[in-house]
Image 1 (cartoon, rainbow, N blue to C red):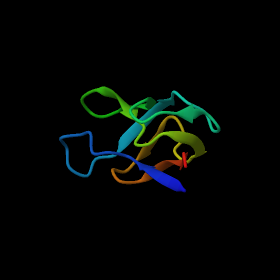
Image 2 (image 1 turned 90 degrees about the vertical axis):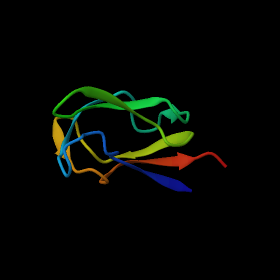
Image 3 (image 1 turned 45 degrees about the vertical axis):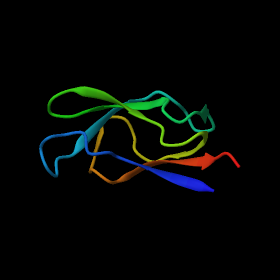
Amino acid sequence: MRIDVKMPDLSATEGSDILVKRWLVTKGARVKRGQPLLEVETDKATIEVESVASGTIAEILAQPDVKVAIGEVIARIEVDA
């Protein structure tokens, strides 16, 4: 089963886009819940976004240096059975 990783609301500014700075994992990498997946930049800080589940990175949808909206799917994790 795949789980969508969505861009969390990290900014106090409602509706603002968040810039993906860099991914800390690659497609096919094994991850654990709570492990940092990527760094994002808001208008106030650079923050690590953690994995919401344990499994394998099946897809990375948001590319570095691209702004994404809050709630947008940025990756998918194939969860452990």
